[in-house]
Amino acid sequence: MVFPVLYNWVIIIFRTCFMDMEYNYLPVWLTLDYLSDLLYVVDVIIKFNTGFLEHGIMVQERSRLNRRYLHTSEFFFDALSLLPTDLLYLWLGIHCPMVRINRFLRIPRLFEAFDRMETRTSYPNSFRLCKLMLYTFVLIHWNSCGYFALSRTIGFGVDPWVYPNITDPDFASELRQYIYSFWISTLVFTTVGDTPDPEREEEYLFMIADLLIAVLVFASIVGNVGNVITNLNNADNAFFPNHELVKSYMKTHRVNKDLQTRVNGWYQHLHINKKMTRENEILQLLPDRLRAEVAVSVHMGTLSKVTIFQNCEMSLLEELVLKLKPQVYSPREYVCKKGDIGHEMYIIKEGKLAVVADDGVTEFAVLGEGNFFGEISILNIKGNKSGNRRTANIRSIGHSDLFCLSKEDLKGVLTEFPDAKRILEEKGRQILMKMGILDESMVGVEEKKELTVSRLNEIEGKLDSLQTKLARLLAELESNTYKLRIRLEQLEKETSEWELPEVEHEEERGEKDGEANGEGEVKGDRVEGESGKKEDEPGPSKGE
Ligand SMILES: Nc1ncnc2c1ncn2[C@@H]1O[C@@H]2COP(=O)(O)O[C@H]2[C@H]1O
Image (cartoon, rainbow, N blue to C red; front, side):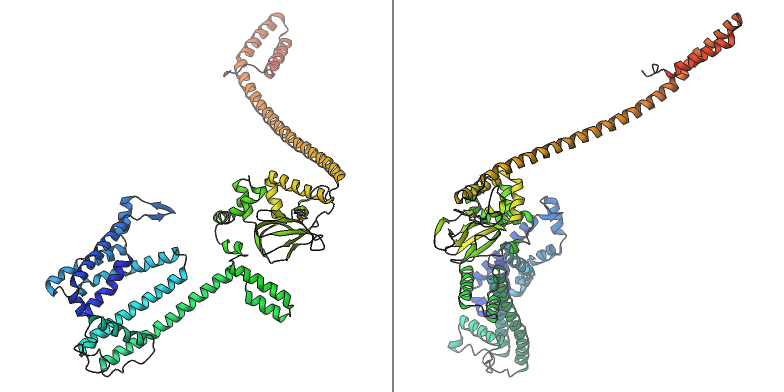
């Protein structure tokens, strides 16, 4: 939509004020007019088919899309901008392009397109500058059209302020008419001065309006350019540590020249090679998952070269990559010194580092891209006589780019990925053995200790689970006893109900027998006793 809107924005006024242009190039204008109208129609069709987000879900249903667009004020303005006002040509004549002024109603669409471009482009600052230049051009263009139209109304060449007489061959051509007007407007808007003084009221009014606008334009240009420059600096500050601050700090504290040169060299290397040490800060605004994906995609190349991570799952790499801190070392700078306490290990992203003897000259080994070091002192390898102290000096040969991983972060990752831990420990053990600082007897003792501890842990775990089972069984027993009791009580009630008539019968028989034998009371007691005994016995229930 940028081109048709921009075309109408610039050309309608141009054709209205520069009549010669309008008369001489009419077929061109008409073709471009209807082409732009066609694009306006296409834009409306696109809008009818553009989905929208509802509760975060893209709605594509045609009926809903139509209803939504039809109910917006945007549709109202879009429809107005497409009204066939060209029919007014029939009444006003074909040389009246102002009838198409309703096409301006689509200008918000141009701003919308610019906003989208600005968020998508990789060069937002350059884009902002170009946009500012375009707005300035359109403003000067409109002003030059106004100037030329006013000059025509007052009369060409009647005074030095207006456009010179067009009968003068030097000022007759259409191109000269436009360029001269544009030049005058540029002089006014840039407040350079040297413009002819106005002589009539209309000219004064025109100049006053122009100068007022010029002040605003000038202020906005200065402000915008200032913003762009500040943004550039902001981006730089976000990527790189503030060099000026460190420089003035070193000067104030009279840091020795050699050290200052080394620090400056380090800064230069960062800037020239675009090395960033503040990646984690820059990415921290992204959601965790997205941040991990970006970091993995940027550092995958390096991580895939590191032996311990070669066959690792993606989840390990994602977890790891967010914990890596980039560091840059200068030539001959020590990354760690023998005997220091180890707090982190390093992965080499770029550059070469040497394992050097204490004399600083003898090199035991050279490490390169994808290698890692510094793991021995942080891994607690059994039998390591140097404990948590560095076993060697590591010095950067040239500039080197490293990833630093802290002891805590490494531990956290390794507990979840024991294979990587095994490889790391094995490599460390080999180095320690080569150096003769691995106490192998300790390995046995330590291993036995570890075995006992692990068995104890196992037994503890089993005991725990047995205790849980026992508690569950006890609970089940209790609930079953309770149910049984309830059941028995129910049965007692039921049996007492259906045994009663039989008891009465026996009692009656007893009484009769008693009457006959003269010992009724004794019998009655026995029968009662028997019936009481029966009540206690569980009998078949009705249901059963
Ligand atoms: N001979 C060697 N070859 C490669 N790397 C070594 C050698 N000696 C020591 N290192 C590494 O240098 C590191 C120094 O710190 P650490 O002792 O923590 O861990 C050490 C190992 O990773």
